[in-house]
Structures are given as C-alpha cells and as structure tokens.
View 1 (cartoon, rainbow, N blue to C red):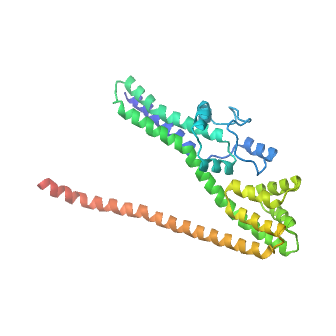
View 2: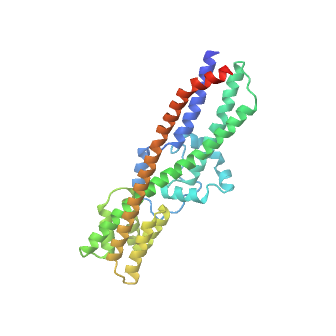
View 3: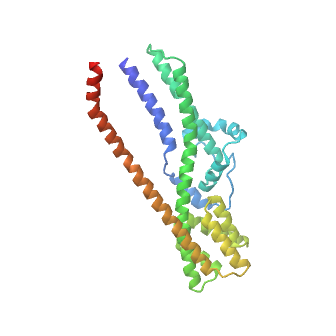
Length: 306
C-alpha cells in the first residue's frame, strides 16, 4: 500500500510539473536561434499560418505533438483570440504550435486524475466519481490556459523591452540628425549602433524598405503595429511627416524621445511602488499567524470550560 501511495504521488507530481513547465519561460533552443539568423525573417510578416511548413515533430515539444490533432478543431471554433494572435505575432510564434500546446496541456491535465484514480482503485481504494471528474476538469482548464498566460507574459516583457529600445533608438536618431545626417541615413546609423532583437528588427525593416524602394516610415509603422509598440508607430508618423511634408523632424523627435523616457520612468516607478506594497503582504500574514498562535490557547481554554 505504501508503494502504491508513493507511485500515485509521483504521477500527480509529474503531471503538475508538466503543467508548471508549460507555463514557465524556457530558453530558446540553439537550432531555432540559428534558423532565425539564417532565415532573417521580414519584420513585415503577418500572423503565422495555422499549418506552418516547418513544423516537424522534432521542432516542437512532446506536449505540442500530443495536441497536434486538435489544432484544426480549435481553429474552427475561433481560437486563438485576437489579443492572443497579436501577442503571438509579436513573439513570431506560429498559432498552430500554440493551439497544439494548449490542447496537449489540457489532455495531460485531463488524464492525470483518471490515472491516479485508476491506480488507487487497483490498490483497493475507491474514490467517488465527482472527485476525479472535478479534478480532471480543473487541471484540464489550467493546462489549456497556461500557454496563453505564458504568451501574454512573454509579449508584455517583449513590449517593455521594445519601449526601452525605441527610446534609445530615438535618442540615437536625434544625435545623428544633429550631426548633419539626413533622416534615412540617421535611421540606418541608429539601427546599426544598437544591439538586441528590437534593433535587429528595425534594421530588417529599414533594409526591406531600401530593397523594396518604399518609404522607411511605412515599414517602421508596420513593425510597430506587429509588435504593439506605440512609440515606434509615433516615430514612423513623425518621420513620415518629415519625408512627405518637409516638416522639421529634429525637434519633434527630441520631444518624442523625452516623452518616451518620461513614460518609461513613470512605469518603472509604478512597478517599484507595486513591488513595495506586495512586500508588506508576507509581513501582515506572519503577524496574523503570530496573533493566532498567541490567542488560540486562551480561546481554547475559554471554550473548553463552557
């Protein structure tokens, strides 16, 4: 009986670890990074197709392979939502893989209580049907929602990093224009000076505009729309006015850069204040526990004497 209980606990623990692992961020495999560098995808690429040609069993995890047959069904019911599609486009992740991960995680959560109850039944312990059924539904719902929660978290982190990068990019563009460079040259110089994925995407957008002989502000606006970064779209609008209407761009860009930095500073201060407030919660909980520890003997003595 002891061995059966240990085995049951191990199965439940493995299932919970799978759900948690699907929700936590994972490092990008080296082969995917090299594939991105070799392919140099266009920043103007829209949403990924629902059946990506490069999707093989080796390119996705076991959870996605498990849920792959359910991709068309989930897509037919309107999943993922528009907000999730925007986040996936910003992260450059295929919607099909995301739906497969959702379905696979839901299947894992659905099966864990069934397997656990089966093991208990084999050991002579019979559980009521509502218990495992409710646990299956709860774990399946949690597994289905975990990939979406992870995508939203990663997209929010990407957009925060992108806003910082765009603020630096604006400052570099202003410096280059102040040095006598034209608008297009200033954009290319600023993109070449920076490092990171956002500067890389900006460089791809500018190179695409040069090769396609289209205005650079159009590609920057499309990149800003794909990433969901408003400062980049505002930058494209300001540069577009300079290119099409002949407006003075240096002062506008300087004011825009200062506004972006002020907004980022306010966001950082708000996050710090929220973190400080959250730090008080454990202290209050410890104090409440201490009061319960002190007051329980007295309350027990009073109620026992009645």
